[in-house]
Length: 471
Image (cartoon, rainbow, N blue to C red; front, top):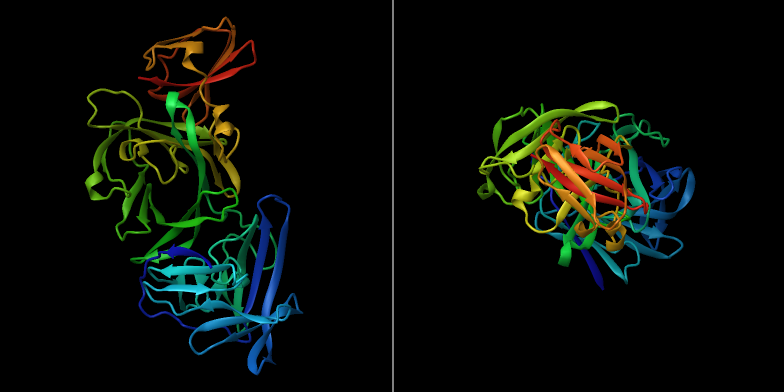
């Protein structure tokens, strides 16, 4: 029997948690949307009402949108919840609330002969809900409420297809206990104006012979519901590395305080500084990688600080250098306020702490709006080498680009008898800073120091892309 085990890690801050279970007044309102059809949205309501007896055991009837549902529910004295499906003439374990740190809990909810869904309880969180009580939880599952992806997902850690399900609201005794803050109400598909979770997609790939990309993947990082640690409110951070967002991994919790962002990784109780947007040009700061721990501390400085326009809004941009370098060679990282590192939200100063491969921020969404898109790429997700090789730099043998790094005059020549028709230059935030028709030398002395993207168009309708460094 195949077994899928998901490690769930959240921090405990309250010892005594409410242990309420379901009762005849419980009601769940859930929503289903689709990754493939933005217009698809379906809201349904499950509620418990009335006793029934099946195989000499007492169950509670379940209604879907006020119509008797295919299943009935029963709880046991040992904190387990079972669902009996009339169409299957069989009972399935839906939930096992015997939570203890270090324990692995499995439920055979769907296709039990083929697949077990298991969670390893590493730490237990406690969350205060709208009725004022505290409830024990592990990611996605709250004791007394169920899975926040939808009650009938049981202990499953992820969805098996392109649908996205979520619990909108949960009520008990007519009182609203839980509400999904991403939506305005409990009965329709309208999202809250500022509550849609921010997300980042990050392109990862290795470099093989002749710098040909290999092992292409995209990591999707997103923020979810609140969590509390040491009396402070955090957002949970999750990631997945597949197109359908099935392979979900819990990364940790993040919070903002003023212009600083702090992060506690899933496997640690230490809080790390992730970003500091109070930095001004020339300021130095000590920085640790949360992946490497205390031994990774390095001294960095704000090489250049300015503002860039992103979707009509001026945002602070900080280009990071390393103090230990005797002379400037390249910008190690670029941070944009409200977006984070252009290496990816969880990868600030990546080049100094992790070796091998390339990481580049592809897209950033906030409030379901595309805020940033990498100018090199046309999509927000790639998983095949052939999909990105077409946007990689043309072989340098076709062009002469010199000097690079450049101080003032950048020379560009085409070596294959083609004629250059247009040149465009973009800064690291994707803003076009230069455009010229048919020119093979550019004065960049007025450009700020940092990394730029050079696009060269020729008469064969070929677009070649280069990274240049202004020193």
